[in-house]
Length: 245
Image (cartoon, rainbow, N blue to C red):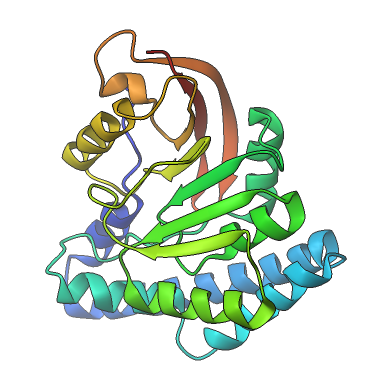
């Protein structure tokens, strides 16, 4: 069985030995995050800022999170919820998402659900650059509120954000579902896979680090493709699956 890489757990274990080590680890993590963010900005500007609507949405996101990063917001929210894995936040780099779109044949004809949309950057990219209809779901209120403000400000009709838990939020209407599962627990992934079993035959699913076939009864899904993808923390595999029955 493929095992998702628990990114947050790795960080948490690294910080565990003592308070000084934890503090130094957090400072190092913040510096690394900032450097990754700077590099990602210039790459994004070069590749995608020719699309004016995406550029406006991306710069709006940058302004909203300039002094309060999504990593900090997620950490505080998870602490308040009593979650043990408080470093679970992560984003899919846009060039990685472009590879996923290409490998999986996702197009403007699709309705993509991003489960764990965070601040909504990938959703805005899928809508403005690819032209797909997009629904982003996340359980952090600040992420949804800010993404909705940008959506309204820019008059975007093809992208929507929903505040909710993946296990209870409505999932009807999608043709492609994207789930970054590397920081999620095994039990949760099993429950999520069972929810996917309720969706129509022919629905496609893209999961990171694990295939749905690890968590469902034989014959429910077929893995159509497996390919490597790169994230700031390293390389893993993406899986394209289709609902068989």
